[in-house]
Amino acid sequence: MRLENAERMRPVVNALVEGGICAVEVTMTTSGALEALEACSGALGDSAVLGAGTVLDAETARMAVSAGARFVVSPILCPDVIRICRHYDVVSIPGAFTPTEIVAAWEAGADLVKVFPGGLLGPGYLREVRGPLRHIRLMPTGGVTLDNAADFLAAGAVAVGVGGALVDRSAVERGDYAAISERARRLAATVRKARGTVA
Image 1 (spheres, helix red, strand yellow):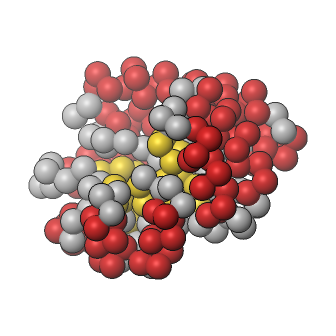
Image 2 (tube, helix red, strand yellow):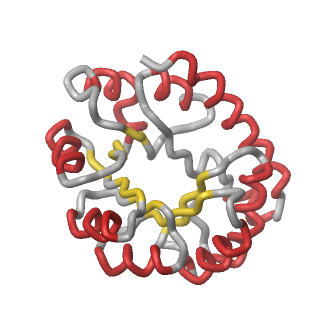
């Protein structure tokens, strides 16, 4: 979830949870993200797992965990971020693109590896990479949509990260949280159906 500012974060999170999404990533590029993350994590209880995204360094990871993040996502591999996550028993999801980067992230202690940008090469790339790397839990993000999420799961992804295709910026600006909930329902249904076709 990448917003211009954090003021609308709570209603957007609520709309996603209402639609069946139970893990929401709050990007650290959002102004006021840490404060909003702390407020949302306290209010939601166990109804959703909140995490921090676009985490580029250990200090940001530490602050995000202190604010209530239960997983930390990065577009890059930063071993210090993984170490912070392991220290605090928080799920670490560093980013990688090539097979070498994917293996390096896994060997550094990642719980999942974010294949980014996943949409650039598509589900076929993920399927090919999984041939020799079946032991690594992959999560494509960047270019994953409601239309191709099932294809990524069928290619062997353990999860998908869906951003702008799920949290439509214009819907947020209009305060049309029902539209966001509806997209969330569609994505949740797609994921449930696709779980039976994993490679």
